[in-house]
Image (cartoon, rainbow over all chains, first blue to last red; front, top):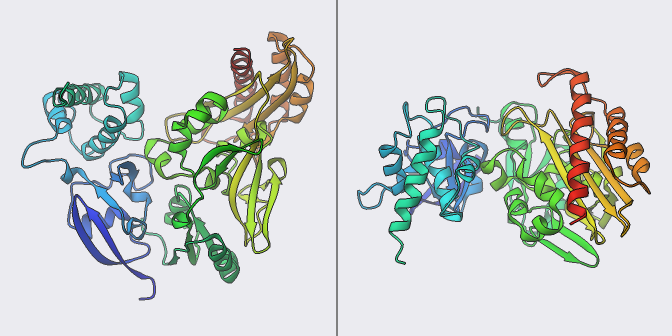
Length: 162
Length: 289
C-alpha cells in the first residue's frame, strides 16, 4: 500500500515499530496496534479529552493526531504512570480523594494533570481547573478531581529533597 | 471516525513543501497543528488527497522582535504563544487571545499560522491581527510576499493565499509606548468557538488621547471583521466612558452576525457592543500603566 508508513515510536519507554496507514489515528495505534487500552476513546471529536496522552511531554488529544505524525517521538499514556508496581502520586490522589466514579475520563484526567504538575508543581485551584479544562467528567462535578490533583501536588513535594 | 484515505508526505524544507503544493494543487492540504483539519477530515468536510506535513520544517517556530517587528513563525504552537513572556508583557492582546483558543490539549498542537490560514471567521487570531494591523508573509515558488491582514480574509474559509503558497510568518509593528490591547470572548464552554469576541488595541499620547485604535471582531460575519468606522471615530479622542460607548455602538453596526445554535443575531450584536466596551476599557487601563 502506497500510503503505508513505517513508524517508530517510544511508547511508555518502550520502542514500538509498526507499518501504519496514514489515516490511522494515534488513539487507534495505541489501543489496537500496541494493545494498550488504558487510553479511552470518548467523543472522537476533540471535545472530551478522554484520549489525552503526552506527546514529548505535552498533552494532546490522540483522536486528533495521526500515528504517522508520532514517528520518532515519545508517547506517555496512563500505563506509563505506574513505577515498579507503585501508583503514581496522581493515581493515589484520585484513589484517596474519590476523583472518579465511572472512571471513563480518568486516564485523560491523569495525563492532563500530569502535564500541569510538570510545568507548575504548585498550582492554585484555578490553575488546576484551567489545566483540566479540556477534559470532561460527567460524574464527579470536578471537585474531587481538583482535590486529587492537590493531593498529588503535596505528595510530589514531599518527595523533593529540600 | 476514520478519515478517507490520503497520501502523506513530510517535506523538510519550505521549497520542497511549495513544490509539493504545485504538484498536487487543490488536492493537497498543509498539515500544521491539524486541530481544525483533522476533525474536518473525519467529518468528510475536507477530503484532501495529499497531506503535506510541515511540522518537520526547521526554523518555522519562533517569537522574536527584529527590525521593528514582532515576528512569529507560522508553526509556533498556541501553548508557546500563551506561555511567552515577551507576548504576555508587551502584547497582552495576543496573550489574551491564545489562552482562550480551544483547550490546553488543542493548544499543544494548534499553530498561530494555521489559525489564520484556515480562514475560519470563528478562529480567534484573525480579529486580533486586524486590531494590530499585522502582516502575514506568504512563501511560494517566487519567494516571499507580505499581505496586510486587512486584505487576507477573502470570504468564509478563503484567504488571499495562492494554492501554492504557505503562510510562514506573522509580523506586527512593535507598538510605541503607551500602547496595549485586550481580547474578550464569550464562549458557551471551554473549547467552543466564540459566540462573539472582540479584540481592541489602542495607542495613547502623553496627554491621554488616542492616536491609534484597532478593533477586530470574531465570528460575527463571513470573515473576521475590522471595525474601521469605530477605529476612525476614536482617533484623536480621549477614551472615556462616553467615547468608548459610542465606539462600541459603531462596532456593533459593523458586525454581520447570523443566528445559529449560539444565539440570535440581535443577541450577538448586543454582545459585540458590550465586548467592544470591555476590550477598549481594558486596553486603555493597560496602555495607561
